[in-house]
Image (cartoon, rainbow, N blue to C red; front, top):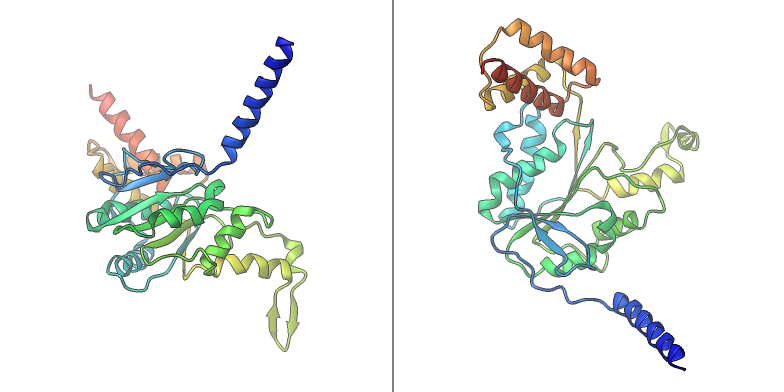
Amino acid sequence: MFKRIASLFDHAERVLDRIDRLVPREPGAIPWDGAAAFRWLGIEHTPPIKPVKQLHRIALADLRCVDRQKAELERNTRQFLHGLPANNALLWGSRGTGKSSLVKALLHDYAGRGLRLIEVDKAHLVQLPEILDLVSDRPEKFILFSDDLSFESEDPSYKTLKAVLDGSLSVLSGNVLIYATSNRRHLMPEYLRENLDARNFDGEIHHGEAVEEKISLSERFGLWIPFHPFTQDEYLILVQHWLERLQAPQTDSERLRAEALRWALQRGSRSGRVAWQFARDWSGRTRLGGT
């Protein structure tokens, strides 16, 4: 008898626990003050947003060889901060060329003017309506930032992002923009077989349904900002810039150039990220050798 009663209590406790997980939680006190950047944890957390304590110190002046991209996104952000019409932006292109660094640098330079950033992981994009509800009445200007996006066609987060950008019931308020980065121009993998469905009508190319579906998401971003691989000269400019920022000891320029190019060759890339990594290694090695 007692074992049966105990079993019923255990079963009831498990049922209540499941119900508790299904019931929406109160958002709790959102720590808006004292932070410029936040990370969205999910509506299952209380509160669902966590402030980022250690921000990247990269400034717009640190970004070299991407002047056109920097000018375009900065102008769009300034329009946004002044309450003028501005566009959501997709930064796409080669890895390590400064896409996410540009967004972080904008926060560094404009946080004092009310700019705030909320980092939203791809898995949490399905919760965009909840995020919009939380920030819609705030006085700050928020960039919802998703880094390194890539989708499959049936991904639920893809459909949510598409709906929000298109102006669904959860429309973006005047204090919110979405900035996203991706290595893919259309945020989704592109296959050769899909291009076989393209047709020629009176000299015009009409894409197949699969390609049209992929384009339909990326075209909802008002700004497309491409990032291309750096040339060898641009890579060396970036190396020199970061060495100066790190106050690396002066050394033979020919040796430095050869070492920087060898470093890039080993990694198969002349990106800004590789230039930064080389500068850190070179600066540390030369200083250690002098101790």
